[in-house]
Image (tube, rainbow, N blue to C red; front, side, top):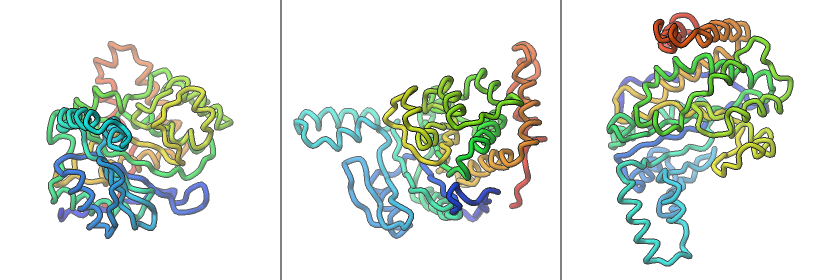
Length: 337
């Protein structure tokens, strides 16, 4: 295991909308371990019991906060593995072919239940253990479009709070993208697309503070009726108003929950000094900015000036890269080690 043992900071807002400790879900995509090896290793590390849900999915039971899932992250194969009523020989042949073709590209995914945020230290140690066991991540192969996704529970459902978080993320996106060093394969998959410029400009306007959740959600869905955003708000908005979200998209993969779905970071689980603290502390910058309305307004004003520049000027001055550097100098808070 790694000796670095990086400290996991906690956010400023520690309680959720019910006044209880905030939770966070973690999703890790990786290769290097078979689904059986991954399930057995995690179960041993966390003292859980393994139950085989299907050919491509295992449920790890015994955690007081819910079940962990280890699965092949490929919807068609999972579905075929669950369909026992099909012609056995035909289904098995097709399934085996798909499995063979997809094996180098499709990761195994470990999905935690919503964990109380202090348990991120446990996730950190689990990642070290999986690395030692042979888990491989994004940069291990040019073909690996592997991610780590974080689902931090919202501290409040108040529309002003949610708007503040959205503004903060849009202000810091270019810096987060640069820090995450997203590989080429992940960029071309469209799973972590940036928000459209016109939507960013709308939300970062000084007077954009919707009075209702409906207005915030409808504005979002008009320009972003998709899960393919670096910060996917659809699970949260579905939790608040599922019928409204379904007016714009009927994506069956949307899972309603009172949490942000941050899907930008790579999963570099095979690298010795990589761990969850890197992406988490990036997210904590969003948390910190969201707590300070005056800083949000000032940061948004500065970023809008960059976005309003003509293309030739942005290219000449470095554009988004220049803004990421400015964020690094001026708009971040310092976390103690």
